[in-house]
Image 1 (cartoon, rainbow, N blue to C red):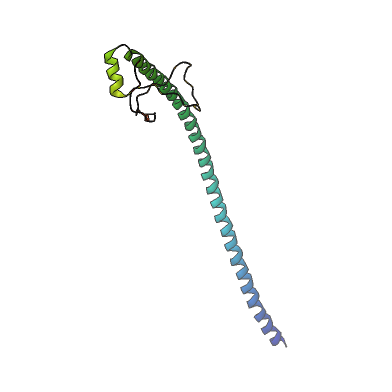
Image 2 (image 1 turned 60 degrees about the horizontal axis):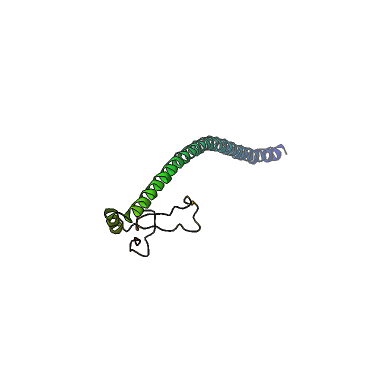
Length: 149
């Protein structure tokens, strides 16, 4: 009887050994996958920190660029006011001076009313005096110069 039990016990050891070996291999691969996942997460955390630092730096540069542009916009507004004042003076001078009248006629300089919904209003009593077709203004529907009184 021992031979029967001996053979059945040895046949029982082989499946248990294979099952234990399979479980060990499975757990080993799971541990390896967790380690790789941990490395991936650490890489992503490092990359995220770099991206946050880069975004903060870009935001600082953006704020600096805006402040520099504001100064240029103010300067541009002053130049435009000077240009408008100069053209208004030329229009006024054209009433009495022939050379100024020729310039006004040649370049089609005329006063244009400000749009009613304009965000920036001109000082009271001043009208826009831009030559028709100049940059920043729409061409006048009437290409004729303003009549001199």
